[in-house]
Structures are given as structure tokens and as C-alpha cells.
Image (tube, rainbow, N blue to C red):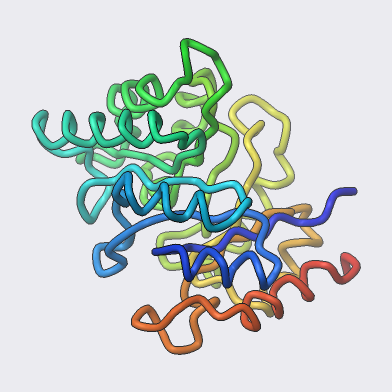
Length: 240
């Protein structure tokens, strides 16, 4: 069995270097954590891509919340996504809901199409982020997204309140892996702590996402390689 995936949020090349040194497998690249993570610039992506050899998933999100925004704002986001793709980005993070908590299928489909490489079906892979935890119907959302090319991961805490509350949902969804709508990997994240790992791994979850847990000084401070290393060590331990 391959080792569990550890994804770390990075804001800049220094974060990326520390995450790689600590044993991260993948980065989620964002800017502006005061707005819970927005799309970084093409220049920051290029600098991070040059600094490390880890896969980098780039956030596609123009404003706080999970709405796609007005047509002008969404068009600007699509242009930013196309520029990042031209720079070499081929992994992304996105997700949009309608006002009533349904998946905004038109926005998700349009943005996924923008980042498809050269017309290829699966060349750009992407994560549907924690918008799923705010959805009115999680199961319905998964099934509506099932045929969109490139979707290979759901980043989820199981609950909008975080992993503490979402553990039972995560375990239930992990048990449905491989059934229609549940083919993408579950990546647990959102208030994730080391003490959650035993139950999550026992449920079969093998991908984990950390942000603040990699930053002992908080979001004003950098990613700490030793903090990432503690997660790597815990994930490399045998499944309980």
C-alpha cells in the first residue's frame, strides 16, 4: 500500500521549501488566508514551481465564500486560471455553490474546461474543496459532479464545523469509495489534528490536508518543517 498523502498549504516559495523538507507530498498554493485562501498570482506559482519538485494544486477562488461571483468576476477568474495553466499549472482546487446550497454546475464545468490541457480529458486534475461541507445535499453534489473530467479529490472535514463534528460522515463516505459519485479520493482537512488520524486511517482515508497545523506561529508565520515532519512521522506509522 502506498503511503498516505500529506498536503500542506503554501503561500510562497519559503513555505513550499519547508513543507517539502518536512515530508509533504503535495502543496495547495493560495494567497490571502484572511479570506480563507484565494487564487495566487502567476508569478508566485512560477516561483514555487521553481523552488520545489512537489505537485502543486493551485486554488481557483476570487473571493471569500463559495459563490462563483458575478459574470465579470468569474470571467476574471477564468482568465487567471488560463494564465496559470499557461505557466505550467496542471493541478487545481475549486468549487462553487448556488445560493440554496446546490452545486453551481455551470461554474464548475466552465472552470474545469478552462484548465483542461490541450483538449485532453484528464491532463489537469483538480480537487473540489470544502464547499462540499456547506452543500445542502453532499451525496447529490457528488453525483452531479461525477462526469466532469479531472476531478480526483474531495477536500472535506465531513462538516462545516470541522473534522471533530464530521468524523462519522467521513467514515461513512469512505465506506462508499468506488460507488457512483464516490470514486474521487477523500482528503480530510479542516480543523484536522494528529489525534484524528487513528480513526480516519482505520476508516480507510489515506489523504490529509493541513494549514495552520504546519505553522506554530500562526498564519503570520511560515510553514515549519519540523511541524510538517511530525505529521509525516504519524502518517508513516502502521494503520491502527
